[in-house]
Length: 255
Image (cartoon, rainbow, N blue to C red; front, side, top):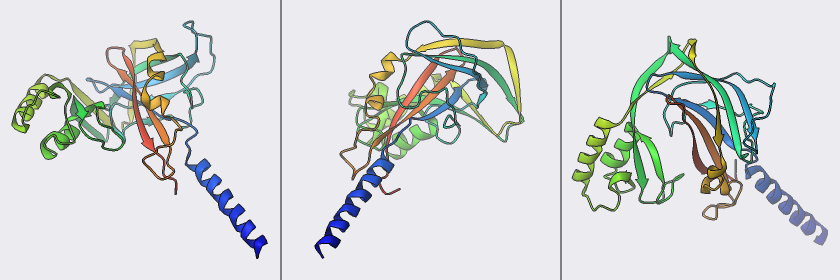
């Protein structure tokens, strides 16, 4: 009987270890998008990680086709799950991209969207109180109009004591002046734009200090055994800017 109990305890311990190891993420959830007023896509041909400013020679080439989308999108991004050149679990000091903008046509879906900045007033998974994000007009409508600004509101009015009517008025003003970005998906024709081919190095050191990176693989104490994962979205802009969109999520222990 005692022997059976010991075996049962060992089995429970082993199962617990397996559950924890399975729920702890091993890699960043990395994606790419092109944030374009012209609806351009991007073809990334090289991804080079390096820890000194000098860019090392690399003969390995990629062919990552990146469609146009907006920050915060989940359903219209290019997953980098199979890319061996993208940072997997730790950011280097620098990363260099060789890429070219592409004209997209014969698309199954196209629409325009504007972007505004929201600040969260409460925890709202995966966001926390105080987080500021770039949000599409649809997402902003949900939080400001439908949610009456109780969970998230315009970042520009935070702390100013505006009521919901005044907040919506300011929101409408910001929409009128914000840029209009084009979202395309399911495009059959990708035409390279020869005049828009670039090699750009990004300093990732400021991003390593972000809470979303620091939390990677740490236990989320607000859940039952879940760990923080980190979603990184490499965002290519028409003006040549490349930014990283960072977001945490929590793993599910039972999946």
